[in-house]
Image 1 (cartoon, rainbow, N blue to C red):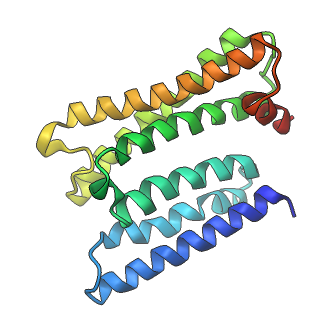
Image 2 (cartoon, helix red, strand yellow; image 1 turned 180 degrees about the vertical axis):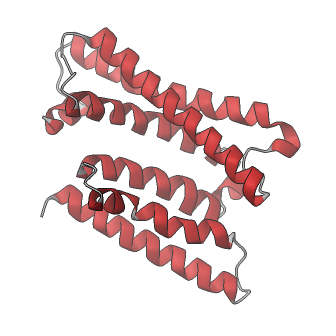
Length: 202
C-alpha cells in the first residue's frame, strides 16, 4: 500500500473520530457545534471513495489535497470553532486552499497529458485559474448553504461582498506563491518542492 494511500486512510479515520466525539458531546449538551455540518462531514470525508465506486478516477494525491482542505475548512474551522477562536484562521484556510488548488491544477495538467515543461507561462496561468475557479465555486457553495440552512458563513450580516472578495483574494495569493516557486525552480533549473511534486505525478 502506498504511503499516500495510508496517509489518506489515517486522515479519514482521525477526522471521523474527532467529528464523532464532537457530535456525541453536542447531542449530550456538553459541546456546542452545528450538527448538520458534522453530519455532512462524514459524506465529505468519503466523497473520493464514493466517486471511485462510480468509476471516477480520483488519484491518491488528489484525495490527499482534498482531505487536507476539508479537515482545515470544515472540521477544524467549523466544528472545532477555529474560525471564531483565531480571527485570521479563515484567511489562512483560503490562502492554503489557493496553494492546494494550484497543486491540483498541476495534477489535472498531467492527468490530461497537457503538461509541457517548456510552457511555463501557460502552466502558471492554468493553475491560477483553477485556484480561482475552485475559490468561486466554494463561495457559491457557502452562499447556497447559508440560504438553505440559515447560517452566516459568508458574514452577510456584516458585508458578504467583503468576506467573499477577501476569501478569493487569499486563494489567489496562495496560487501565486506556488506559481512563483514553480517559476523560480524552472528558471534556475532547481529540483525543489514544486518540481519534485510534479515529477512524483509522472
